[in-house]
Amino acid sequence: MTSVIHVVIAEDSLELSELYHERLSIAPDLEVVGAARSGREAIAAVGRLNPDILTLDIDLPDISGLEILPVIRWCSPTTKVIILSGHNEEATIVEALELGAKGYIVKGDGTDVVKAIRVVQSGEVWARRRVVARVLDRLIGLAMGTFQETERQAVPVRVVLY
Image 1 (cartoon, rainbow, N blue to C red):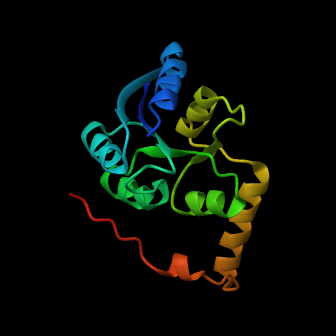
Image 2: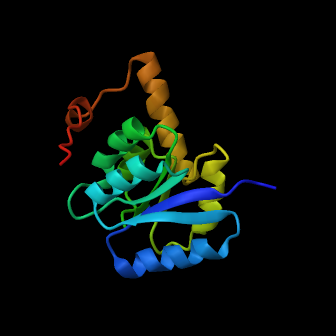
Image 3: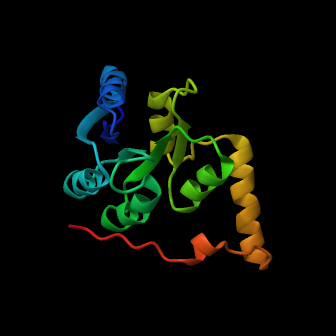
């Protein structure tokens, strides 16, 4: 028997949060152990609950999901993050993966969130193939010294916790 995957949902839309909770609650191998409506709440919930998976809205009202990723990696290194976003731009997706997200789901594209969680928990990455190819191109470029950091990538992320 497989162990239960513990999930925290960080989504500022109450309607979407309830929808994700409902979908995940049907799966016998998933348990929603917490929910957050802001970035600060997400960081606190992950620090307190140490879930297996955090589904993280990229557009939380106080701190963006991209700014939260390094904090989550620091305070709960075993928690895998799946970004939930209305953004479909490859650059945003690539940046999320570079910052440590293990999955990226575009809201409303029909992605099975339950399947994505299971895939990420098994150690794989959930993203579109062409995006993964771009990430690999960047990594190869870095390894060969040909990739140039953008100004945003060169500036360290700073988050103040209250």
